[in-house]
Picture 1 (cartoon, rainbow, N blue to C red):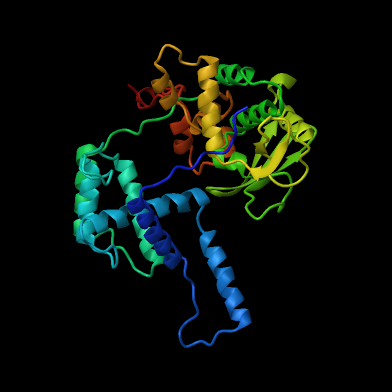
Picture 2 (cartoon, rainbow, N blue to C red; picture 1 turned 180 degrees about the vertical axis):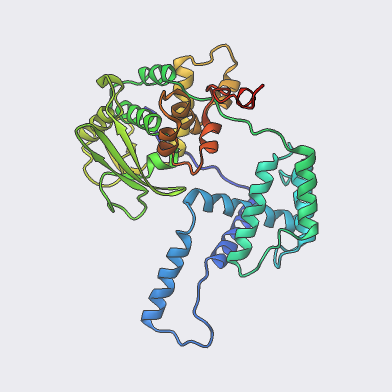
Length: 371
């Protein structure tokens, strides 16, 4: 059986130097300290540590990782241009955005690379603004050197958002059918069925604990009842409850799959979804990374022969973790407001973006207007 740990790769010496500088920059951004005129004490020092922990909890781990990569990329770009990323320079940031959009330097190599999408550039800019704030600076995104360049990029390069393919009911059934009934197969079956029925993000799936407050990094917990499972999630949009009813058959019931996994993996405390031993016979202690969910979806899509008329590379590109949420939104034959609540969306419009097949003309304003 293949190991579930990823092999690390060595980096050239110059990349290691960059990594050290980036790590130092990150430490500086996390540096909470007492005011210079206040004498330190054991109590105040502990409060500094507590404040630092709360500050780190202000955003999700995935967001913080993305922002850290954004800063690392920009800092390396500045060093290559002979500039310093601090203090913020709207002129340099405008040039950086233009470089990303044109594709002339987004890979930080001599060869030109693919231009970044408008949404990615926008995200990069948000990452820079966040990092500057953590370092005690304010980035004025309305400065003309930034705002006008970004507006021009959006006007010239903006495209409709490319949506991932939805995993529909027949697809999820075919996907779970490819999984064996060993311990690892039981776990992956529970992940797919629970993620689909709950319309969960991949981070929400792997952050679940068996009980409330089992671990410091918990993102929610599970309560199994007679009629289903209640998930309490501390998600992207705040706390919410997700009700997952029992299915019509045990073979495809997400609650039964979850119970089977917990029973045979002998898990009664801590993370719900953990790694397994190399032989697949024993559950480990470490929580799964959310990337496992994405890899699992892609692997089972291929094994189930979904969209088999397409080349493998295109099929893999069509599906991601969001395919589970889109699948629930597209397949559930219920009032839209129930789907919106399950997905945790603030608006029905956001829910409709996830619906890959729906009656777009069920409300005919033309006839309602008398034509």
